[in-house]
Amino acid sequence: MTFTGNEPHDITLAQASAWTKNYRNTITSSQTIAHYFGRAAIEAILAQSDCVGIREYYALDDAGAKQIIIVGVDANGNDLYNGLLAERSVKCPQDCAAANPLNS
Image (cartoon, rainbow, N blue to C red):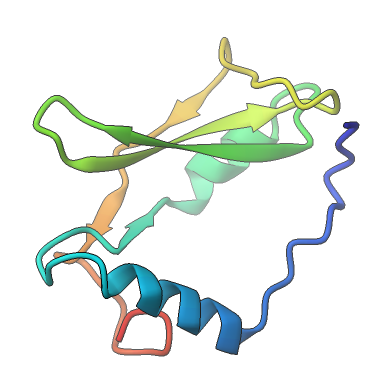
């Protein structure tokens, strides 16, 4: 598959709300439901030469906590793993948005 950076990723709020609720129903209230990444990290990854998008990998850190690793992707669908990678996300819970259809 060739990637352009313009692939459709739209989802309705109703569907996103249902899916996030499905996930929340499988975990305890103290487990991670979201990760925040700052604009600078995302823009730095997207600014890499040949980058047309990002891929997110699910991961577990050494303590067994859920993490997400972000890597740039080129038009051939290859990870730009020798470039910038992002983690160190701000997790929810601890730092969550106000209650909304995606988190409550």
